[in-house]
Amino acid sequence: MVMLPKKVKYRRQQKGQFAGLSKGGNFVHYGEYGIQVLERGWITNRQIEACRVAINRYFQRKGKVWIRIFPHKKIKKKPAEVRMGKRKG
Image 1 (cartoon, rainbow, N blue to C red):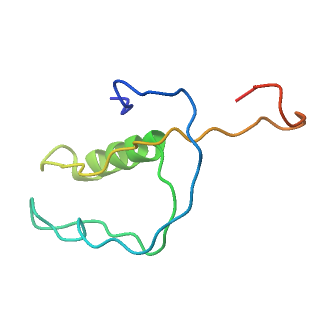
Image 2 (cartoon, rainbow, N blue to C red):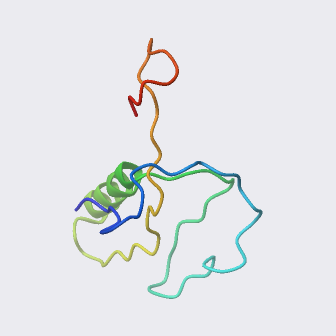
């Protein structure tokens, strides 16, 4: 279950900066338990998927998992030993 935006205007997006703490989305709306982050940062679709798989494996499919976050931003990183520029991602 890969989570990616369906349609984006541009292929790459600038990273930007964090604006502050979240004002919403930090309450448990579904179920009884939740996971809360302790600091700011980007979260990727692979991290979300790894978390979902680990939770399902721990509970052995006896519960339901709701994922209420979505990776809207594609964060790219250049490979090691590649010079700046040259559109390599």
